[in-house]
Amino acid sequence: MFYLAAAFVAVWTAVTLYVVFMSRRQHALEEELGAIEELVAASTPRDH
Amino acid sequence: MTTAALPQRRAARGVGRIALLMLNLATVIAMAALMWASLSYARPALNLAGDEQLAQRIFYLHMGCNFGALAGFLVSLAGSIIYLLTRDLDWDRATQAAIEVGTICGFGTIITGIFWAKPTWNTYWTWDPRLTTATITVLLYIAYLLFRNGIDNRLTKARFGSIYALFAFLSLPLTYYSARWFRSIHPVVFSGDNPEAQGDFALGASMTQTLFIGVIAFSLLFSTLMIMRFRQLRLEDAVADLREEIE
Image 1 (spheres, each protein chain N blue to C red):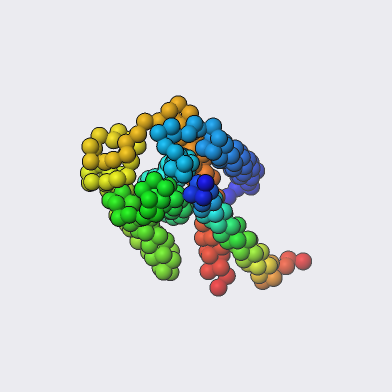
Image 2: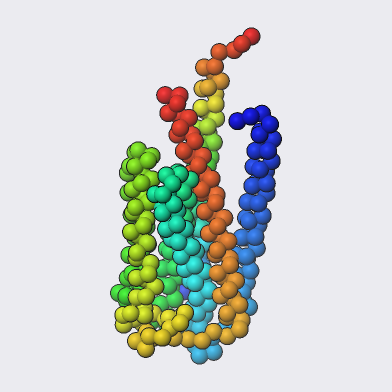
């Protein structure tokens, strides 16, 4: 039973870690994009 | 872009999101079906007993991972060739995403094999030709990801990555045929006609169906993860371009 459980846990852990990595990267990218948007908005001269 | 094209672009993006959501849902259902089939539906191997009989169920996950890895490395081969011909960075992103997911699946193939080997061969690891070539393949693709990260110039990274991925793919046929060409204790599942290869076996109906579910589930898992990572890599490049423009 140990070998069967260990194999399933190992594969699911690997997949989960990859999904977590992607999720954290996505979060960081969205934050960076938000910061760039703010920077662009601040540096754009207003018409009125 | 014209103002008239904007609603069309938004609509296409909406359809894309729904399609990705459906793919995610199909993957979850298929993976749940694989868990059920491999742990409950597939009949136990009658010629085995004890731990070895239980460990035989690892086979469905092992083969699924194997197909995921194969899909990843095949996509990377196509992606790198098309990138070198067209110089379209989307193909480089597809190659990277496919290799990342393929490597995860390749790691899954090796680790499930290790846990199957202990009760079957009485050892976690042996330097069998199949095991060795499979490990070399995964290490080659890990090296691809590490080397890529060491290059700053985006175009050099893409060119180097594509050429490397082409050569790394050569290890795949070697891995596939290793259990057929060399003296190997690894079972040959498909068209095993090498008398030197031991452990040839026949699958019952429920086993074949479970294997089929595994291949579909991992193909869906591979597609979902690859598409999501591809989109993320595209966003990463867009953010990098914006940052460069501002600086």
